[in-house]
Image 1: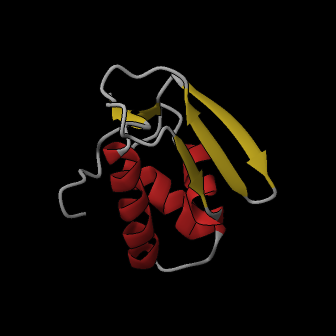
Image 2: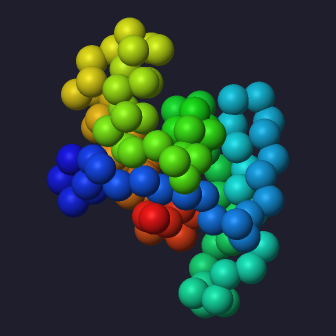
Length: 100
């Protein structure tokens, strides 16, 4: 999983307002001291990002999330792992999720 550890549990930031429109999410950061004035505080996800966001619950290890999605979507665990890892990295860079 590159630099994303499979045994890590992530939680969503508490400083966000979430709006769902069809298969996408619009995530607005309400307060985050780490942002500078030039940073964008509104993010959107595609359907895949939306599914992963909803599964980041502060209780599930990343490897278990990947296994569950692989079974639900009848897809290769390697493909699911690649997608989940990329999206988790993006969420981390934007301070939308945090490891616990």
